[in-house]
Image (cartoon, helix red, strand yellow):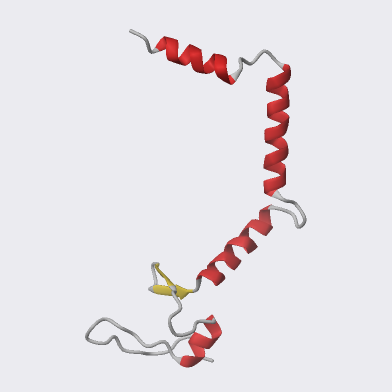
Length: 104
């Protein structure tokens, strides 16, 4: 399949994507596609392909098998434990203090 094809824009602004390109894109009639305007022209892609590209980019920075969600939860639990063990005021005391400081 050629990577560049020529097509026309209809009077109402529509273009026809050739069948080979729709198939390569994995797009079916009624599917939504994303359009991005860049310096060269318009790039057309599906949401699934966009997500796959984002995941691939993230994998360049996050090793396979590492869960950022699990790391975030572990960090938050450790932070909670540090605050609970320290002298951090309770949520109720913080709320009363904030409310009292707003009084005229």
